Length: 319
Image (tube, rainbow, N blue to C red; front, side, top):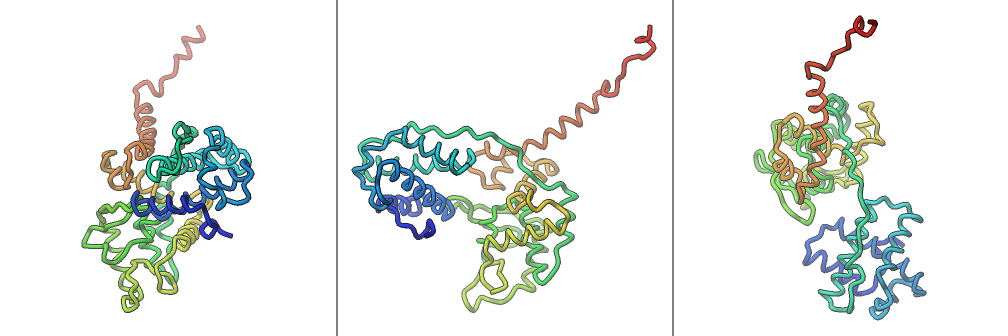
């Protein structure tokens, strides 16, 4: 039975409804939190000798303490091999869940997750395609859906949008040189389209199947004339990355987002705040990972030092 169809206690289901209806969380976040809660309940049921999650009553929460939560995180680390970023998401889920039970639903008298710490996440530099690699990728696009696939990849590389944002685009979201996308937390933002994007969209619309008669206004359609799925886009991008002679295990749709951000920052002289707005980051700290391109500039500056090629006088050393 999948996580989506596995029943949770009624108060956990109410929490997920709260996330969607009041907190405005995305469907992806709700899906991930459901998975995290199911894993937590399965763990805590074994720890507290309860047969199944739906039988874990509110009264049983009196027996949950902070050490139980850390034991769960240790389990996900040792037994499941979850990375720090995945465990950090589980911490965020548990904090939000127990806060809801304590301060919103008023179902528990204490909040054991109030002092729950999140694992330290080591920041790594984002992987991205070099400019020449982008040219290779765009030049190999061909086949039955050439115009559609080219439009998808050119939008990724120029606009830095997320996969879910691209899949969710409707034709009505496009107006001249602007595009409205819906990002995390159902937040809308405006993306400005350059000439390459505008031309790609126009060329694709010329061959796009006419489906408005059945109420399908999605920009990108599948072979079955329905809104294209995230899996289809991921498969398509991987296919062309491999055809371009690039590492399909190393690069993905999200790496194309990194590529767009890196190219804008390194070649477009984009202010970090402007880049934050373009990418739809809620915090500028997230955007700051793209300042890594400064390393190349620093290296170039050092190499231009007038003493960069200095070598000691060999004759003097012989004396």
